[in-house]
Length: 289
Length: 289
Image (cartoon, rainbow over all chains, first blue to last red; front, side, top):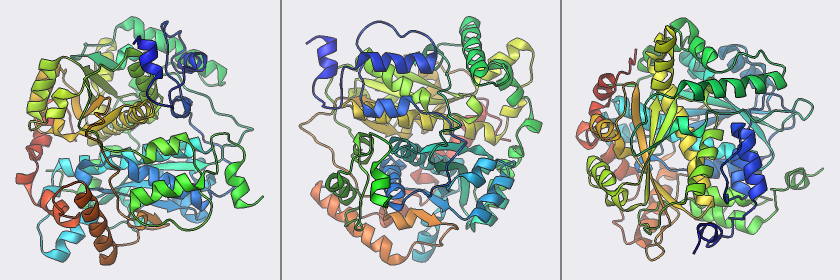
């Protein structure tokens, strides 16, 4: 069996629609993919066409759409089946406005019809343990936070794929970590629960279309057998150029990538309050030992 | 426009294949979904049918399949476009065997044709800053770890959906956090880089089929407007029963959910070394301030 045959056999989802696959790679990386066959299907089409949507139509997200997105989220893997995550669905305009304020005045949080706040949730097991007189001190370590963050993120990303497959747009809101105690107050979070990020959901406003943002060349992030060492300067320069060309098309400042990123991580003053995250998590009951 | 019409218009992916959607929900939750229309498409079908695969055929994963999974991974959102993640693809049998050993002797790590180790990678920006004489002290906070873990997890979950859509099976390996320094040594990781989890990838061995594992009822994880408080005992009991019935079908010990989970978080002795995670991260260069 040739590699091409191997790739198109055995699963009905896999269709040798090479031109669409190659086009999607060009859009994502802004360079030509290598020769040879590429697999393609509706799932890849959905995932590769992801774009940030910050302009929404006001139509509410129908209950069956949220139900299927939740089933997708819950179908994601979870460490040891612990399921140490939860999500709060916020539709109330006033509450969304308060959360928008806490995330540095991001208007799309107020304007999207559905705002989902994804939580690392150790409370469910903590309360269960307390009710049954069982210790839960295994949660008091940094590992407890990791479990919750990974579980919540796996779930959220499945929900994003589900929403996008149904014609909805999304944008993650890391700003839910700017002021974790205030977010907890607005959402009535118990101890041992913290917001990992938010997610705006809604129908994209087609009068303000979003575009696929180029990413680092794959060889900058994919290592073979062992970590390959620093990214060659030429690759960074190529990507800076690709991003500047994207920014020009979008009417944005052509700042490229590397300088912008170094500005973003220059010090605590650039963290929008997240230099306090550790303190806030301890206040929320996380052990972080 | 009725809600049913609204749900099936405007996007070719959305097909009113209600019976398949309802069947997928029954399999995932082990109870009947509410009445009414449900959206359905190939993406939802892939996501909802996720199952853990630990038995693999030895066939290598073809390069174009990995290329498309990587493109899916890189298409996922990343905080501020920082892209603070990397992945090491391990195919060498000896190296997989060493990683299997470090994760508590999980044979499937050795037996899967492709083992991906997903990394929180602050090194790329750290090195870039050093080269250009720019400070990167914004990475020295717990928030830096969060960025890397969230970025790596969003990427990995997109890769999982891509692989599964192409007929491959996967299982996440949290055991990469059991002995982070040893994993770093095997993979040649530089400072500021740590394994978040591994992922086995390969064709499922159809002589040892995997099943969809039931999850908590949706109302236990989805809260409306504010956090709803502890999960009612009756819901936990329902889920314990659902999981026991799954375990019986699988020929597993019928331990249910709640007791098993409380055993899993009872204390540091149940963390397989991950009570040392904080110390190991600090040794790897993470500030965690």
